[in-house]
Image (tube, rainbow, N blue to C red; front, side, top):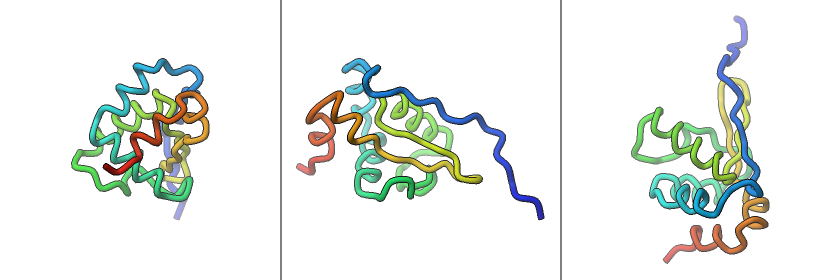
Length: 108
C-alpha cells in the first residue's frame, strides 16, 4: 500500500519580530486560542497534532484559530506525514513581547 501524501500547502509563518502588539493581543483575546496556547505550553514541542486539542469548534474553525496564532508569531507548524504538528514559539514571542505570554498562561 502506498504512503498517503498530503497535497496541502505548507503553513506560512511570521516571526514575532514582525508582529504588531495589537495583532498579538487580538490573537490572544479569543478563549479557544488561549486554550490552544495553554495546552501547547504544557506539552513537549512537536507532539501535538491539530486534532488533539479539546476545544469546542469544528475542523474549519480550528484551522482558522491556528492560522491566527501563526499570524501572530505564537505557533509554528510542520507536517509529519498526514499530521500537522505544532510548537509554541515561547522564546521568540517572549523576546518580542516580554511577559505577555506569562500573563496569558497564568491561572487566576
